[in-house]
Image (cartoon, rainbow, N blue to C red; front, side):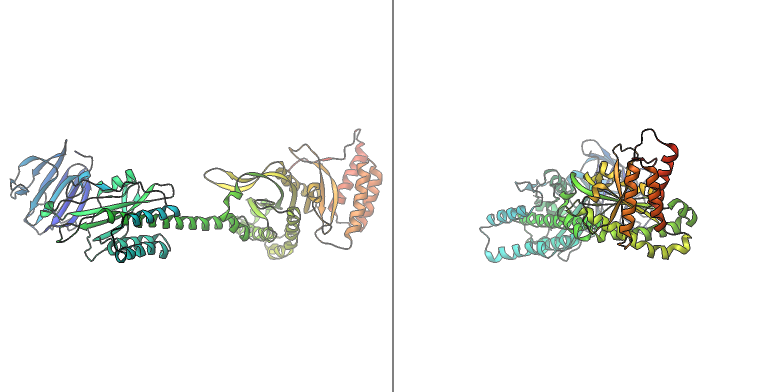
Length: 603
């Protein structure tokens, strides 16, 4: 006995109910607690099939029990105390009687009959299946061309008047459909109008099951329709088009159908669905499914597969562009949607920018979670806009810090200048943000920005669960440390010497010092980038850099005196105050081996 088998209920030779079951089945009329027929439910391990209404007293509430046995046999037991059960051989199973029979078997109750059969023999006859020789290939444009040529070569005996409407309809399925539902509906309708099937359906796979995605019929809808599992299993296993032609002699008890099914494959060649049609053989003059019919169905199925592949690619491109636009400019996002290989790992010369919001912990504890999200969101939105305005890639948000990159995935010869313009723009947008939030925060809004240029490995990083496009390497680490150095030097914007070397005369910068940062042994020269081109900037830079040169030569007293004069003109200049403190400390400590490189103690 097969693991699965089917119960089919007919009323006056019309199929009204089909159930796939496994194990013992009981037939009977509905109880006062059950829904009217026809339906199947599993109760305490037994499948109960309701085939009559409560008021149909010619049926017992528990009328027949069928127990599966080995070798496609079953044991029938009449559970009724008064009513017999008639078998197809004309014999009767008396009330309370039992008999062992071979499947399939049909039992009758007046005008109602029930057929029990192994699931593999789910067609009304054991008709052998026929198939096209070639395996259906994955959907490609060249595959559709090959299918059309094969179809045309096999229809030499068909007149052009007959052939052209077929091909016109088949091509219309491909050309006019805009999405998956369109392809399905048009293909199902073409099965009826073009192939002359009684019904056409598009079936899609859901694990081991098949579901109807679209259907069309020639005016004879069948609410209890079930597909042939035998045909579908062969389509799935062999990836070919199959059809059968049952014998007419079997139509005396139940209506027999000839079926044809062609696989719908994805881009990998896996069967994801089937184009399925059936034709009733009980009708006078009905013709069997021919090889030509099967080839046309295969052509339609290939069209559906090609259309689905196209829709999938278009949707993937849209999803990719939406995802890309979260990190890249709209122009670059459109480019990446068509050239995703740009995101593969490679070495590139880039400029990195880190921007940190000062006092985040204090402010968030003051505002609470809800208001903090609103505040940080508005600030990050403004800072991110500065990145996009200057062609940058928004790599990531790390708490209260933003990370951006220039120079990849698209090469930008002026990436250092673009990053510095974005950094200056960030400082320019602070007054408006500060005005908006000063009443809530009770303190001015401040940021620290660090910029560094150099080589990095860029590409998609992360895992199969979550990926992120970004850079890796020492250049990235140093950019982050430079941002942290803004707190030590009391200035909002620092760039490295590597970045300064890439900038033109439009940028005003002064060298502040050499530092050695955490986990990076090589010293780096830091420059302050002037936020505005003020008339006093030249004087500040000249005075400060002269004092710095004196400090680095170990001339601490002269450096302190020079810084005093600078601070007389610029009393709020943070770097001058810090350098003066370092000079004064050197005068007091009198280092034996002086090193002008400043060792920063933290990040």
